[in-house]
Amino acid sequence: MAEVRLQEGESLENALRRFKRKVQQEDIIKEVKRHSFYLKPGEKMRLKQALARKRNRKKARRESGE
Picture 1 (cartoon, helix red, strand yellow):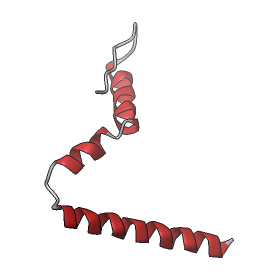
Picture 2: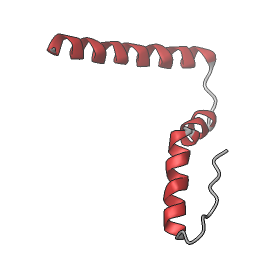
Picture 3: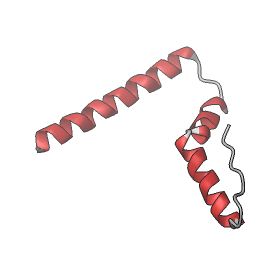
Picture 4: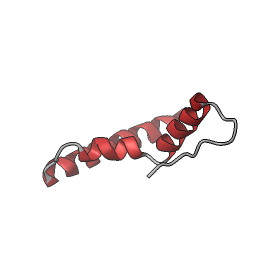
């Protein structure tokens, strides 16, 4: 759980900016999106495999370019 305490003399905008950065670092939004709907185990597996194929294509493209 991301928590930011307002420091002495700190503006609300700066504290909000720190909070947003902390939320992004902890991948809270990604977790919320992942849990916002149910994926059947087969669909989850297909999605995971598709992401792996995409990563491998990107890695191969990068290696062949060097």
